[in-house]
Image 1: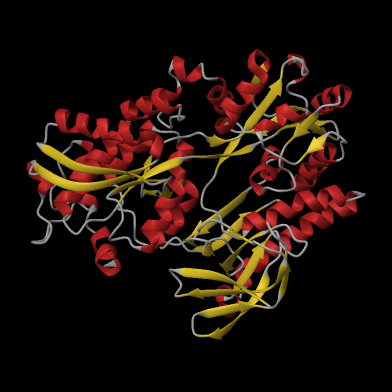
Image 2: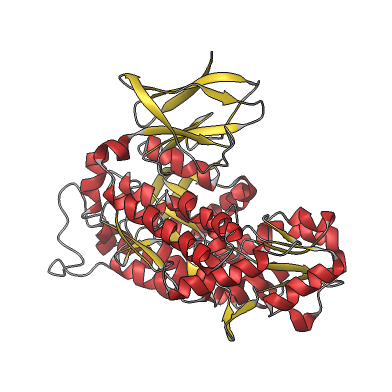
Length: 523
């Protein structure tokens, strides 16, 4: 089936042009080759009329809304298309895992988080948009989201949101407005009030990157046409990177610093928490009228000011490649409708999802939402979260720990040197290392930063050495010291395995590469 889907990607783009509501170009055009007997030129003759059975996967919170939107499409489209749609609640993280496991059985339309994009392309689970559809969608949406849905300028998915980023919540009763743009002033305010400044600088590469982006550093990963990583342009280990860690050091050295992004921290002594829109209701419930939200501050190093950057992320909507090219064109039209200006605004009104559509972003009701307004303000300093190697998250988060431990500039430089060495090693791994399985977790005195090797004891069965595990500790098994392929309690990319009782265990993984089960064997 994967081979069939891969071949279809080469010509199905002409049918996706129908998603623009325009006719395909003549057969002589490079964008629209003549259709074969297996792929009738439906878009050229308006021959999409018919009833199609499809399955749509989306978050539970928007199942009812999505059903209504599909009914609206059925009633309003002028092509005679009717969808008999089964709408199922499948979360953005689970959708990608299920699609990769079995593309053929997956949803015809499905929503997913952008960090799953490369894996879905590699699995042949995303049908490309046509040239005209790509131009229309790219022009209507946030450029960062468009980039996150593209490889080499080719769109493989539809932008759905632009709300997965972070900014600063603060307690107005503690933090004066005039100090909001100064990291140094904010730290002083927190220390004077005996309140915490909370930001994940030791536990999350996602947040650590803000310091480097603020000084102009980059970390840009390149994939080939299959979505496999082939190179990285990373300048964290540079004079600008050294400036970044000097700024980070100011916060990490404060007695009132916490490494957390939990909005509930305002209920336990925080005056500032750096987190995202998902924490708004929690923070509002604690702070009430004292809730403040704005972009991240600037910090000073050697008399120069640098505004902290951030990652910005999104949700995307994918269309599964179809063996019926006419159905493929019709499904693309529905996906464009669901992800369009009206659809995004309806989701904002229903569940406060931040739109990627530029017209929607400028709407007064969107601007009036404190969390989204702060996120949009921070976005001018943000970097789109493109495709990132799965190992990077573990490598980069160690920077914060090393910076906190450093006692001088040489120690700060050593933190960057260690990071650069680990990044470089990713592209020097042997095939044996890339295929090797290991155990990782909050186990044996580590904090998800150490891989414990596994040995293949029989075909498809891998075991660790004996490990001393404690009740409540969590672990997973992963391949190639990367998060691109990992197994948990419920399979591929599943939940963490939780240790039930203290003891000595061997961790056993049984896998065929696509499915896997983990056992803890007591010794």
